[in-house]
Image (cartoon, rainbow over all chains, first blue to last red; front, side, top):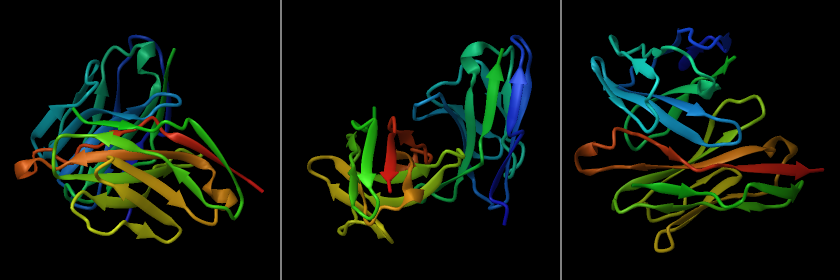
Length: 112
Length: 119
């Protein structure tokens, strides 16, 4: 059982470039999330989804977009990358609201 | 708005001793869950322990226990018999469970505490 898989693990972007961070889970979880973790800080919610076709903004959504066409996949799109988006990005999924979140391994993104 | 506070940026403990990592929270929702995650230097997030707001007993998982004091809104993590492998960043997180489950499982994280275990 792979759990939550994120790709890529590392990426360097130039200012103004775009990219998509991929996230897939094989646990049939309805709830999925994208968090970012800045150095020495806790995680902040970017976007979340409660099921295929349903997404909503979290605490720090500016500069990002998401889609959820299937239960398994929840990609995060960065448009016009900025240095402020240098961070580690985590995708997570939850079976139910009273259960623990399963996290992917993270994507370390640097914007230069 | 919910809020999680971890007031200890760093903690040191001798191997085989116990250590307590502090976490206080703020919420007006009567139903919520509290989580602790470990983040080693490799970066992954590892779930340690969960406490529901209506749970009567403090949660325990092996060497981890959660000292839940609801009136004081604190949920401290106690690690007994510390090991060198316990050196990591530890995050406290909270999930509100609104009526109808409209929290959608969103977690709010504290700033974290870096634990260093000395041999």
